Image 1 (cartoon, rainbow, N blue to C red):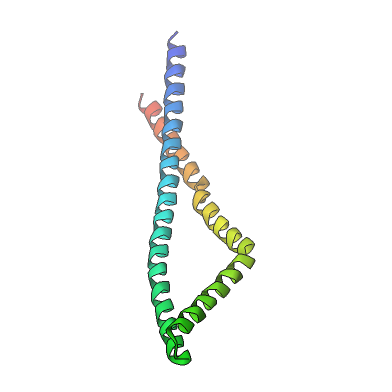
Image 2 (cartoon, rainbow, N blue to C red; image 1 turned 60 degrees about the vertical axis):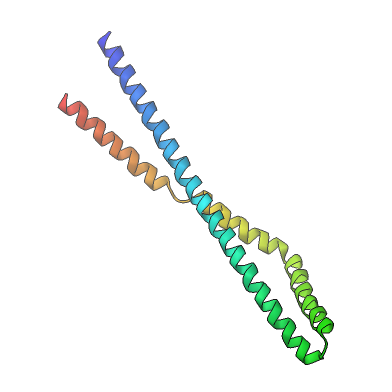
Length: 132
């Protein structure tokens, strides 16, 4: 009977350690994903600000060039429209690039980390058995 309770305790400890390891991996990947998303949002916000100033400066350049505020505004809008059309034509490559970044964030090479953690857990368990 004591052999059964010993094995039961070891199995429970083993399952508990694997559940803890799964939780830690989930937390790590979630934190990396949230960090990447926050960086993306910050970059987009700053990029929109920069784009607004570039647009305003470009409009002022076209106002001086065309001697008309409306003409400068429409010329700037035309350039932005051209950029949007180019991005829409290249959307598959843009989507694939963003998807690969997203996949890289989610599938970080943690297999080696998991292996190292499992090895350290086994070493700790052997040390406990040896002391007992």
